Length: 251
Ligand code: WAQ
Ligand code: MG
Ligand code: MG
Ligand code: MG
Image (cartoon, rainbow, N blue to C red; front, side):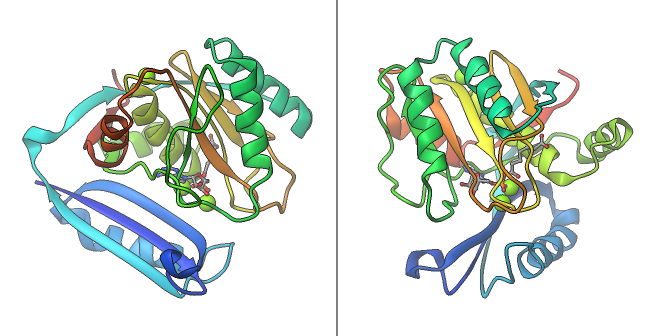
């Protein structure tokens, strides 16, 4: 049996009461791992580089095996950027190569660059018109109920490649799930963690890791998912938030 475990944390009270988002996490794990992972997620919220959370919400729910789907992991390619503007320029090219319009790419970039406050979820943007499609405001759409199919195997795989930081592993799981959604054709992301400047674009089945997407010490970060219309937004949101997905690194 697997459990979905979700954590979100904030400072200055709960998110819905104006607290600032500190960090979140979502895993899909066995009963056996539940207590150790829970402890790790609480520690993450209490010792985060953005500050100590004074609000932590943990949600743990059983997931039925018959509801789970398995998907392949995106292939990773790294682009070594000279500076942030070179990183952004290449990010825009990777997105354009997936058929995403200039206006949609420009709107996505300026949405992330104008954020005054961290969202805890992502913005959905129409890949053609560039209009925002979700109505979740500053909350955004939080993708959850996903993990590696075999956590130990994935950890060993990434350790061998030297990717020991969990940002990359969590991002690959999320990006693989997001791009697996029928109407999603691309994603743009960089972290809101002040010391983490690497970001990515996923498109055309590739996770393009881009080594500089923001200046060091900036806490401006976020995510945009590019959506092909027409789309049933409720069905898409339901897939992203609720469909249990395991990512198989061997597929
Ligand atoms: N669903 C939707 N949006 C999310 C989620 C989620 N589960 N988790 C985070 N976000 C959004 C939210 O707006 C955050 O403020 C923002 O993304 C950044 O989240 O080395 O670690 O977890 O290859 O800080 C990418 C590069 C790291 C990794 C991204 O983002 C690499 C990262 P963070
Ligand atoms: Mg994260
Ligand atoms: Mg897709
Ligand atoms: Mg973060």
